[in-house]
Amino acid sequence: ALLDRAGVPTPSGPVVQVAGTKGKGSTVLWMESLLRARAQPCAATISPHLESITERIRIDGIELPEAEIIDGLRLLHPHLIDLKQPDSDAPTFFDLWIALFIERAHQAGNRWILLEVGLGGPLDSTCAIGHDVGVLTTVDLDHQAILGESIQEITREKSRIATAGKPFIIAEGTHSDLAAEIAVSHGAIPEVISDDDRLPPSVLFPQRLNAAVGLTALESVAGVKPWTVDEIQTATELIELPGRLELLSGPPPLLLDGAHTPLSLAAFAGCFQSYCGSVPGALLLGMLQDKDAISSLAPVAKLIPPPSIVSITVPSPRGLPAAQLANIIESLGIRCQPLDEPQQGLAWMMQKAAAGVPTAATGSTLLAGWIRRHWGEPLH
Image 1 (spheres, rainbow, N blue to C red):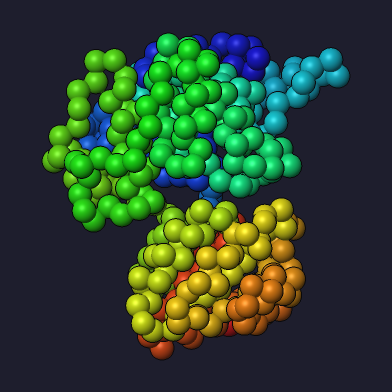
Image 2 (image 1 turned 90 degrees about the horizontal axis):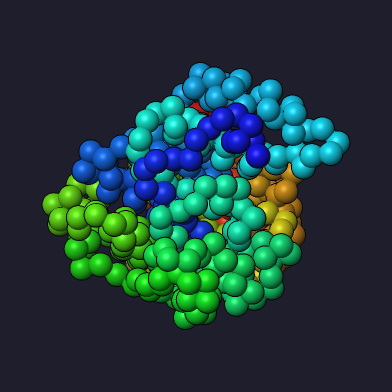
């Protein structure tokens, strides 16, 4: 309704809509980099942001400047006021942001449109425009109160974006068979992807899966030629994945990840194990109150040798108290020291990393963003 009132036309370029629990943003960023490797114009929207709201809208790989965001909001504002009347359903923040993205993408000219779905399902704001290709990345337990208590229920909800006659690309996993069945029932054309031999060996799981899914999605658009090995190598060199198994160079270095679900924390644990080798590492954990900390943190209990662990309260009203998180961690058979202030956690990690101890932080996207803002700053 907001787009119609503002007179924003439907995008004329190919549209790829990406749903899933984990890997959505990474898949969008892989597609963006693949398109940039071909000098193909593209607009992408990802969420949530880590450090700045400008991260949510990207034109040709560049964050939208604040001035452009303000221009777009000025255009949409009168129509937003109309929709806030008592007889109308007022748009949510996410509705507004997707409308802003589509309007700014239109102003930028004909280009590929890469949409990261919010929670998922046919009522998601990104469904305001039809897609040429639908994508379902990894499905995991998250937002169960809204999406369902099981992988199967969440898969059913997220797969409902599948559209008749359109390709539906699915990341291989425990959910993929069910997702393919649902896609077929919607008249879509499912394809399950696990890997792509054209990707260089340096691209490891889980990003290898995200890259393969994104590559297949782009190549599913009619008339698009397959990417060459050289183009894929260029995309690999272009891509940046902040807060996603990211190694901050510091000094000192820090492995940072926003993992907060069972599958993503299992991937983190595998990466951290390799990072530490046979040396005991140091790990800072922080999570939000609405996450299933017990199930999600189980892979951390399997790290050998066990790392030193501290917990902090994520600097957010939704942050799980450090002491409560420490109790959960210790119930898994792991020692954990809760710290009263987040800044104490930064100081602890700085001290460990500077001493050469393999050090990491994980448990929340909000935590990853906060640490990225402050890592390397002088401690007071």
